Structures are given as C-alpha cells and as structure tokens.
Length: 566
Ligand code: C2E
Ligand code: CA
Ligand code: CA
Image (cartoon, rainbow, N blue to C red):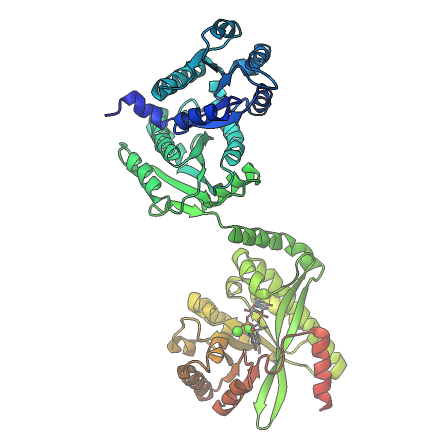
C-alpha cells in the first residue's frame, strides 16, 4: 500500500532535471532511472550546461553535474554558479567516482553527491527528491513558481513551461484545456473562503493526477480557472468524470459545476495567450447546462464569428456609402405561348469594401438577430421606390416590384410607416408595390401579422406569402391572413424530379390559389422540365434562373427596354 507521502508525491507535477555528462551512456542510464518521475534535459559539457541554464533557469529544478568534461569542466560551472544568484537557487548534485573531489566540490557549494557507477536507482531518486524539496522549501522562487493553495504552477511560469513542453515533446500532438468553476463567487459568498478553497484543492488534485498520467503541465489562474497543456487525447471523459466524482464528495456538491474548453492539436509555434483565449472561448460556450461539461474550440466557427462581427461593425459605413446594391430578378407571367415580364423581386447584395460581394444568405440572418435588418429593409424600400420612379420617368409606366420584409420586421412598429414613406414620397401607387413576407413569420406572431397584412392590403399594397410550405402555418390559419399571392417554396421545385409527391404538393397549392382567387408564384425554377411542369399545372408566375438570375439595376433597366420593344 502506498503511504500518504508517496501518494502526495505522485500527485505532484513533474520537475525538470538537467543532466550534464560528456559520456552519453552515463546520461542514458540516469535518464532511464529518472524519466518516470522527472522531465530530463541533457547537456554534454559545462558550456552547454550554462547556456541551457541561462535560457531556462526558472524551469530547471536540479542539475546533475559531471566534473571531468571537455570544453568546460564541472569545476568551472560551479565557480560560475557562485557568482550568479539565479543559479544559486538551483540545487546541484555532482556525479563522481572519486571521493577526493568531494571536498573541493563542497567548497564550491555543491549540495550532494551521487556515486558512479549508478547502481541503486531508488536511492538516487530519493536523494534527488529530498534535495529538490529542501531547496523548494527554503526558496523564495517557490512562492512565485507555484500557486500557494493548489501547488499547481503560477501563470507566469506555466506559460514558460508550455514553450518548454513543446521543445521536449516536439513530435507529439498536444491539447490545451481551460477548466472553469462556474459561479465560483457564489460559492465563496455562500459558504465562505475556506470551503471554496477546499473545492479548488480538490479539483487541483484531480488535475495533478491527470497530468502525471497523461504527460502534461497545469496551472491555476484568477481564482477559479485552471489550465492544462498535455499530450493529445481523443476522449477526456474519464478525467472529467474523475473531477465530478471528487466534487460529488463535497457537502454542497450541487452548486459546484465545472466547464471545460478544449483547444485540440495546438500548433507549437502559436502564441500561448491566444491558445488560452481560445480555450476560454470554448469553455464559455458550455452553457449552464448540468449535462454538458466541455466544448471543443472550433477554428472554423470562431472565424465565422469574427467575420460576422466585422460585418456588423462595417454596417453603418456601408449603408452610408451605399455599398448595399439592390438587384432585380424578373418574374414572368405564364400566359399561353407568350410569357410576359410582369414584375421583379428586389434582392439586396452587399458589395463589401473588404470582402467583395456578400450574399444576403450570409448577412440577412445575422442582421435579423441584432435588429439591423430594419434599417437595411428601410434602405431597400427607398432604393426600390427610387428606381420605380426613375423607370416611370424613362418608360412612362410603373413597373411592379416586390420587396422582402424580414420576419423580425413584423414586430417593428415603424414598418408600415417606413414602407409608406419610401413609396409615397416618390408618388408610387401602392398597387405596384408587392410586399413579400416569409411564411415562417406567420407562425410566430399570428395576431400581429394578420393586422399588418390587413392594413397593408387596405392601403392597396399586394401581400405575398413567401417560401410557402416551409413554415408551420396550417391551411386553416391561411384563411385568416389576408394575402394576394402565394410563393411556393423553391425546395418543392428543386425536388420535383426526385420525389413525385412534390409534384402533388405543388399542384395542390396551385389549385388552392385558384380556389381562393390568389396568384400562384413558383420561384427557383431552373430547368425546362420544371418550367413545363409548372406551366402544365397552371402556375401563374414563374421566377428563376430558367429565365434570369437577379440582375444589377442597369442590366435590369436594359431588359425592361428590350421587353418594351417586343
Ligand atoms: P428569398 O426571398 O426566398 O429570395 C429568393 C432567393 O432565391 C434569392 O436568393 C434568389 O437569388 C434565389 N434564386 C432565384 N432564382 C433561383 C434559382 O433558379 N435557383 C436558385 N438556386 N436560387 C434562385 P438571395 O438573393 O441570395 O436571397 C436570399 C434570401 O435573403 C432571400 O430569400 C430573402 O429571404 C433574403 N433577402 C434578400 N434580399 C432581402 C432584403 O432586401 N430584405 C430582407 N429582409 N431579406 C432579403
Ligand atoms: Ca422573397
Ligand atoms: Ca422565397
């Protein structure tokens, strides 16, 4: 059975030992004794030893030094150490087969000796451990190197160790974990600091056991944040369960939850602060869901988040500079053999100063989340009204255009006012203004939408239900909503060839429209086959690449001119 001391030892984090010996075999033998308990660095003469110490003095816990070596011998290293306060803080053990040199070495401040040849590994390990402990106990470094409460590394040292860890394990994939105790301040306030400290120590002991078993290093920061840098694992559930088991043993276990952010496969040359930040971002993504403990940092989704943020940030300037361009997609009336260009749908694009052409599929959902969509739609209403006025001037007639109203716009109390202002200020008769409202809006705010549609219709606008068939509105609710046009969702058209049921559904919608006196529109029509089916089925209006893609304003004006000449 293990003694408590031994167990405590096992939970400690591995120390680093520098072995300095010109004879490779000696170093190899010693390493084989020590590598289970320590990280090993090697140097082959005094000069190399000093170079490594200079670079990594804060990280090396002990030096095992040979005396007779080429280039620079052990005595010279010891003399140098006597003049250097930083080096004095590191214990030195000399490895020797000659009792005579011991005296000289003591004068030079050596702390202990190991006899060559190395015959008793247990004694060597015990000596080294004792010496390190002795030194750490009296060293002031310990205060800053380790977090007092948990004995995990302090952040400052941890970051340096991470770099070392990369050097020591160059070809091995590594992960970074950020572990956070949620609402820790509450635990502090409710149960006091002592209890809160016990929790932190408990978690730290699970972490220590983990990093020992899985080759890693760990630190605590800011009270309730722990960090681990370790060899990659596909599955951490065993470790998380271990922490939870530990926590479960506490008196007020219910209130203690942890969340973990994992940054897998960290690139070795990546800035450690960035890695920490990413792991924290992932940890924050774990909501207060008791059943969820960890989230993995996802480069792709983070990039998307940053991209979205930059889009939002550039919105104001782009609106001002008119970087948003309204395109027009023709809608054709299916009339006997001759199809007539009857109206167009206004579709907005963003010619972004940095990203170029951005599709509304990207920014509309984003703007719907933060309310910017209302301002964008108002802008589109005005651009469209402006064009309609221009065409009237140019061609002598009003050409009908439909504008899209976002489902979140439905709750905008100024929506109607915005529409009226745009079209009335340019004296556009309302009958030429079609308003497309997506069907999903109908299922969320039924009362609001019924009132809105009724009011728009009353003022003479045409109301189109967009994407029909994708929302959850029942046929029953359709009867309550005043509308003029049903736009069959393009997914039915797209799947027309795959599943005959789509043909049945399309036919059914067209029939309903005929029954109730509404206009049926099919959008997303791309092929001759789709077109012919719809024509046969009696669809009133067709929109899609089969006729034309959405066109920039100038091209659409050209098209209007050509159609006029026909
Ligand atoms: P939507 O209202 O359903 O518009 C139809 C979409 O289908 C447009 O995509 C159009 O370019 C595309 N489309 C048209 N014909 C075809 C075809 O034959 N094949 C295929 N594959 N696609 C076709 P777009 O322009 O990318 O717009 C996407 C969505 O963004 C629109 O879907 C609409 O919900 C929204 N949107 C666009 N402009 C505005 C706007 O000014 N305000 C608001 N609130 N939403 C807008
Ligand atoms: Ca639409
Ligand atoms: Ca649509």
